[in-house]
Image (cartoon, rainbow over all chains, first blue to last red; front, top):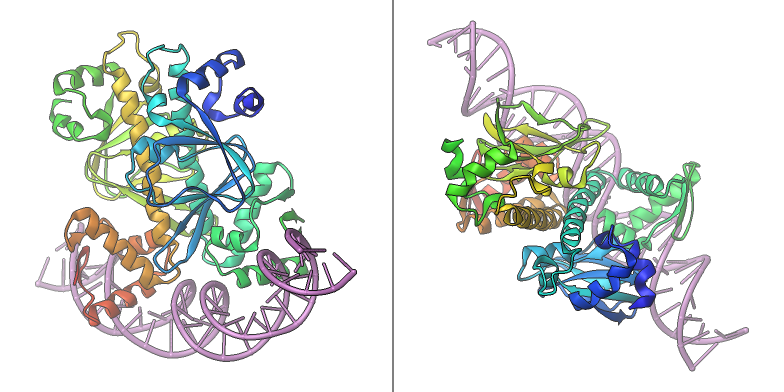
Length: 219
Length: 219
DNA sequence: TTCCTTTTGTTGAATTTTCAACATACTTTA
DNA sequence: TAAAGTATGTTGAAAATTCAACAAAAGGAA
């Protein structure tokens, strides 16, 4: 577990928990690490998530596929970020999303019951852990508000620009990478891929942005 | 406060907290009640929500208005339901939504700090309260997944049907009321109002549903 | 390198939405 | 009750999306 400390230190779930306590805590929580190759499903839609997941390396996408096979991407989980926590806390019987590795990735899984209910050893930092999980859940909700603000736009161009401006703001620079290829970006923005490609070309021709694959620069 | 006990007993935030303890707890939490007339803003976009809100009577809508004046409705808060908890917990400086009374309503406001940090009296039920808030936050996230599933549909008809089927499932009956008028439903589904009206007329003509204002029946 | 696969870009036709304008029905209040 | 205001339904034209098909570019494997 030691080699993951650097990432875990920056994980919202372990904020304000000193490094020296962290290792002991992980044992106490029964944390385990699994590896997933690109495109492998980490949790499948319809299953039950009893655990909280943390991406240690690589990245994963959260997605929904509806009855007709239309895919929506709800978000990208990067290294150090938490997933499945909402379904674990809400004790959802059948989760409505899948989490799929978008790159090869290592994932830490922690039984949510161990987080919510104090263990027999009564680790002193349990309260902090619960507080951190609460904050994380609250921030997930805020994140969904941002996504809804983007997808509430009515045209492909507006959705794309709203998303890119959000990315620029988050990166603190007009130059940044996005975690999606074209099809994935279309599935995130809930628009047609070919129309999205056409719109990117137009914006480039208009001198609004430069782009190369996953890299964008707003001008 | 006594007259609100019946509603608060059914509020997720106070689950598993006995009625006799509840009143004392409310005092301890510094809960206060405010009244808002229809269309009045309970919290304004851009402000800071330090409190958790509970609708005691009436109902409210959570909405976003973008730069161009386009309104999106994120959800309806009915009697007994909690709002603003995510922004309060995440300590968001400028909340991205407004909460507006959709009917005259009474609202209980509780300082979120009082919930998160144990008071000096150290009420025995504080732990339960925090646990309940966590569950509520998790369920809000699940709720957003449902809304995204609905608005990810590409046509007005599909969005409408997905929403109505969700309502029917929630009500446990093909016959139910929705909390929105036509413009509000359009703003929730993120479609054009006139197109929505036309689609409802078509579905009625096709014998798929019956409807009268806010009442719908799937056939 | 070459072949094969995947991704991205391009285009035009069909579908759907949006927009604007108006008619009708319903509510509220003076 | 009448008048005014609000909500809903209807329509056609303009704009945008979706869909399908294909070309070009990039990436991976042998």
